[in-house]
Length: 136
Image (cartoon, rainbow, N blue to C red; front, side, top):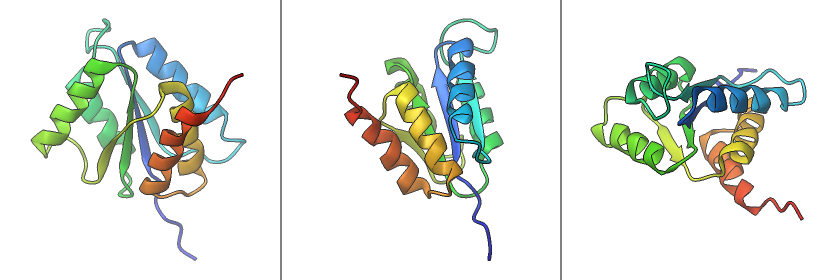
């Protein structure tokens, strides 16, 4: 029985602390399973608030195991940064997708699904479905 490589997850936030904390939360909630590779890409290279195409590219390369990379973002300009990287065509691994999902809930759903062996389509669907989670 061969084990498929897991989907990688990149969490892009305008804050390094937020990206790192959400990554830790998502990995911690996998129920003790071996987690899929997750990398935060938060803030700018000098530690300020913002986004960095270099940090995003580096994180995507670090989590790429050949099964695809799902990128979740926190706010609008992070979307633009990732879309620009995708349009350039050579800055991110093949089969990288920007996921339309709530940042925290989507990250948890993505990491849990990837850790359970879900393929890229399943990871994207699980993260996107997090918009439906009701809190009241």
